[in-house]
Image 1 (cartoon, helix red, strand yellow):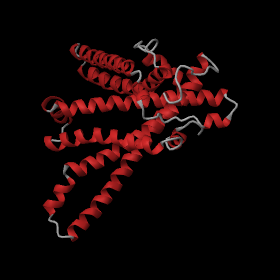
Image 2: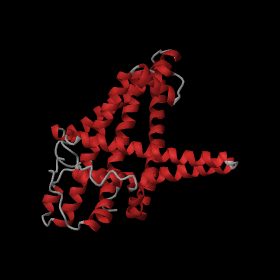
Image 3: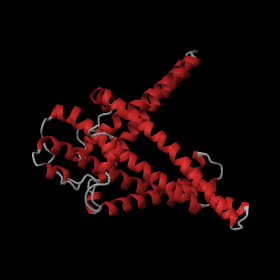
Image 4: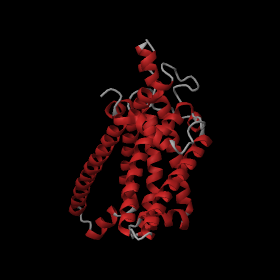
Length: 306
């Protein structure tokens, strides 16, 4: 489908300086994967809470690296979204097809990537607070029902509402941040009710896109797990044939280097899937939301490099 996830994947590998751009994404993936690998191996328990405690409390430098890299990663997504919207605007309004196709959607790796940093920080913090408040309201409602003697109903209502809220967030949040990415403005993007007003605007197309994304994410996870498993078995056989003991082989596969490499690959491929998804979000946003509000207007505030 035009403007869909598959087309988005193709756009990730077209344009100038593609090798440099993907190398940058791999480095970001590595810098996210390494602290996670160190924390997971050193906690041993395999509990997310223990990992976060190790990363953000016991060794906060690991958490700081993860936080900083996550924001850089987010800035890349925001500039990618801006360029995606511009592409769809140009595709609809420009008559020069060569000019449209020459527009790079993958942002350049330069100082402009860090522009609008504080607006993005404010946007993420405020919306994180909103989501926490929504979750708190849902839990409080369940507690009120439970305290009224309707314990089973309270628990059921709380679970159902949290599931519904999660799905609303999956559908609406991408369009809230896409509207922000259009001109990098906080104005008009900080109303907590936007979580619900964007739902009908995205419509069935937004719902189907999320289902496609979740389906591809599941297939990707299964496929990657199988491939990594096959590679691990093959490497284990090779190591065994070369005289390495079972303990040495086990130590290699559970060590920081191997875990970091595997996690880096998973983060990088997840990033590509996420970018392709947001390309499709940009298409729906332009056609169903932006075009309905301000048809045929071109984004003029920023260049194609974001």
